[in-house]
Length: 124
Image 1 (tube, rainbow, N blue to C red):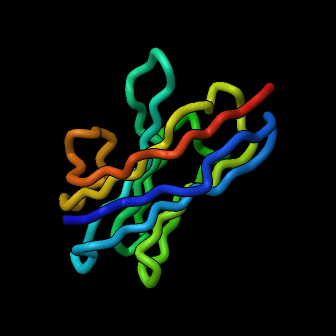
Image 2: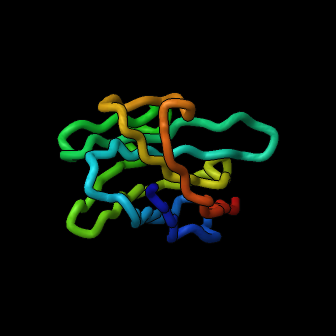
Image 3: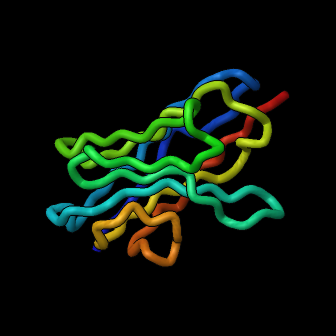
């Protein structure tokens, strides 16, 4: 089992930045792909980004490229989501996920473990 805990959410003005973190505990010896998803009110869960175990491969949903970046520090069992130039439409609960499959999957079903999520609210 792997437990994931997100942190770093909050209220920010449009144009601002936030860095989310997701720290894993438990069975962290395995090579997990890590992903970020977000869920906004009235919308379906949306893929944000994913990163391979090594950190050499990343995937970010097209509409967020240039504003969001994903990184990880395996010495800390932590993955980060750096968000800049935030917009009100970025308001959502952001959740991280860990997957055993070696693919940067944009599909929630392909991830095995999930955190509880952290709220990000962007005011206009």
